[in-house]
Length: 428
Image (cartoon, rainbow, N blue to C red; front, side):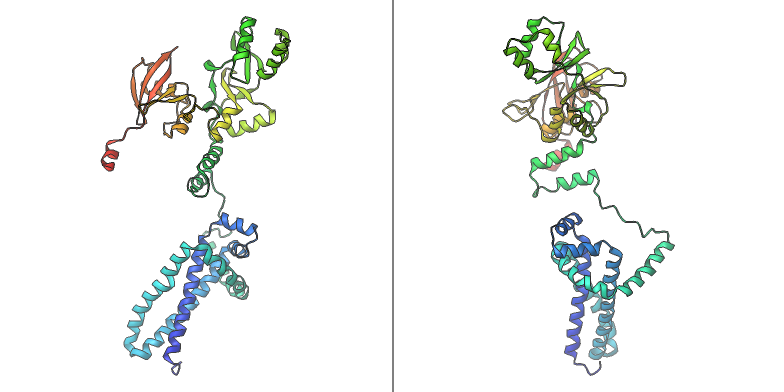
């Protein structure tokens, strides 16, 4: 080596730096790959992705190979740099070589290549996989020995090296992925997918029509009134009962009845013959489960009951699907039929409107862990039945009670969220 031209030594040193940078950068790139995108590309037949996936399936072998190569190259760099320093500066060159070599390894063999690889993981990882695949076969005995010793040490320390991390995403992690996919998924599609994720934690009570607002047909009414109600109703299916909803007899499909009515063949007897048995839904049923139940039972409407069999409300398939796709029925302004925008920037909201619907339509963040309707939320906050004109601030939103009827708040005028003092100072 003493007779080797200094230029060749510098060229060899530069080549070793490139190898070190390759090992460092490719390690970062392979570990930074999006595993779900990698799996998709591998299934689509991408050769580089297939090789990278095979390497990452056994990360201990891959890491062992990379570290063996990187450490071997770095040792050679140290030896060669020391030799060059001695030939150029003698014994004083050792101190110079140590300082310069540390800085160069840090910049050119670690920070720069790893940063580049993190920014362009796929462009670095897939070509590197073509190199590592045959290299792993060649160096497998040495890699196996190193992994055996390393894993043995970990076992002595009580670390279960056989355990594999679960790569599956949790519901909340998947929600974060969807929220960050703004440029890849249209916003409306994002809302639908997030709505599907929410079905498991939302129950039928969150979307049901309360029992005092259920519209149905009372068979004890005059027959002419029943005919008029059938002819003018906006609903497709109605519950049929005697005196009260507690005496429900079944559901009627209005469209089928109107056909008989047009043919003048509708009588009280034929009307009851077309009743379909009542479908009851236990309280606490998640929307995800209820969607499956509707499908299995071939139903589109049901009554929610508590543990004592008391009817709490009514749920339809349309209400359930609106949690995914949004409101089916809206006014021309695009708002919910229960929410009416005003010229002064406020909204008139029905007291029976569900909190979740208000948050979804207006983009608010009212609490949903307590009462399910706006009426219940205000009553809980005030701890009394308010008079019209009573104002309250909930979640930063000013709300004025407009109408109270039958001990319930029927209409509320709500405004946009007021800025706190801290937010005002920050924006100022």
